[in-house]
Length: 543
Image (cartoon, rainbow, N blue to C red):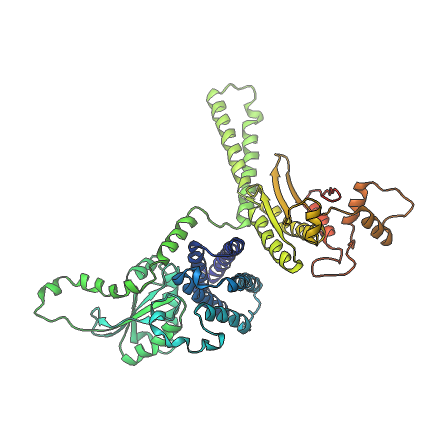
């Protein structure tokens, strides 16, 4: 696997985990608590991001994810009861800030831009929360390392040294280190190879050995490393000592065991006859130290991933092109003029079967590009949440038809238009004054409904809100002011609504963070029409 393939895998996996994390946090915020399953899942997500970021040498990403992992280790051990009700809004904000931070950094990674090294203020917020969870004042955070016992058992802590045991038996390389990686970290063979590369910077290849030996070229050695650890053997004790700091600073290292070669006593013939069980027993002391709860989560994740694979769009396009050629060729063969007038029963039967199979193949190849709109819809939850806080409006988002499938190109393109319409409903549609809603007989909490429906020939996406509706008089007045309408002309309700999609049109008197620049509905119209779609607006005053 090339370095580019590994980077692509890292970006894809991290972005997928961030989408999962954001959904968990938004759902938990509505309940004002994380369930124990949520806590375990967030811990696993941060643990995975920490390990993979460290392997890719993205130090700031590894540091931030490591600290969040520490925080959720405390929550996992003490349940959500350790987080006071007054501190929970800050916890949700920090986690959503983390999602935004990682997404911005992923965009930089994809663009091959330098990452942001200044994360001190963000880490300070996390550390402040950790201090509150521990029941300490924020200023008292410095003495925290004075409690080494819990840190050695926590999977988020630096790798711990397990008490030395007997060596495996190589008198030429008697000073050994057996390294264990975090459960579920993945690509253990490549992580082992990175350790070898780091050690080679100060220790020659002739002065140390390692087992398994083919870690760079053989991915199957990962299983051996998971079961037995990765064994390093040194000629000199000093080289082993210099290797320990390298191992402690490496990403996803859970623990390490120093061993010294001890020759077996000659009188113990039974032990000499069965050396394999002795060697296999060496890593056993580390087994209790590994984070047992993480193993089921990792296994579950592996099981889930087996049903889905990531395929490049260029390969799907190539497949569709080939299938199209097969369909054309099949038609040319079966309709060949050379066959005219011939009665070939066996050929006709085979041709019908071939036509059936090529039709099915064409249907399957076309469906490969179809993906549900759920990811795009789910992202609107975050927009509604953030705008509700900033505009001081109580609004809920209802999603309908999330599993409706659309071509991936369209799904990727409709995100911005939908976002602009949802923001428009939040800013312009839902009333600012709750009392106005109550007086109108509405629920104090506003509602935006985002739905998708496949009619067979087209997909209809609707964004509806139960706000005040469009004020025709205000829109027409602004249209006349902008020179796109005339005061002596009668305009229908539909014509007035169409002014909303004119470039540069906005009914806001002041430019705000969310509106006033007149680029919202214009972007929606141009974006949807570029995909071959149409946009229509309906509105009823007060509803």
